[in-house]
Amino acid sequence: MKPFVLSAAIAACVATGALADAKSELSKPIVAFTPVIVKNADALELTEAQRADLKEWVDTMPAKRKAIEAEALAARAALRAAIIAGAPADERKALAAKVGEMETKLVLMRSNCTDHWRGVLSEAQFAKMLDLAAAN
Image (cartoon, rainbow, N blue to C red):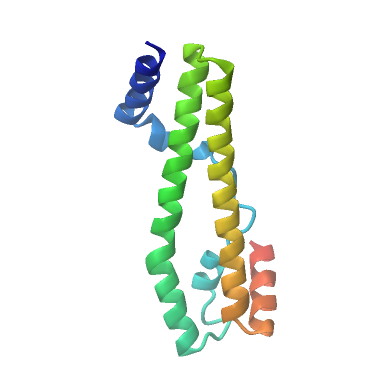
């Protein structure tokens, strides 16, 4: 019976749009440099090759991040439903571990993004980007 309650609660969240509204439940990004680079491409004096890399990154990576965010939100919804339904502690612990796993994926995705830009930008461009990011 409890799996049914859990499934019903998740379905209710999805159907009401609560899952989409729950995005604010995700941890705030530790760093988010791509928007700074997009906004300041001219100030950073990006080369044509860097601009092409930036376009490719912007065209592909947000969709990948959003997919992980959706998984994280679904994991949180499942945990919330399990807590409300009074699911066994072991089940809630496993669901909580899934939430942690998804949050870790998001954090590491941002970390990998920073590594990417550190490799694409010159040392001077990266330093300037950090200054621009700090100013925001």
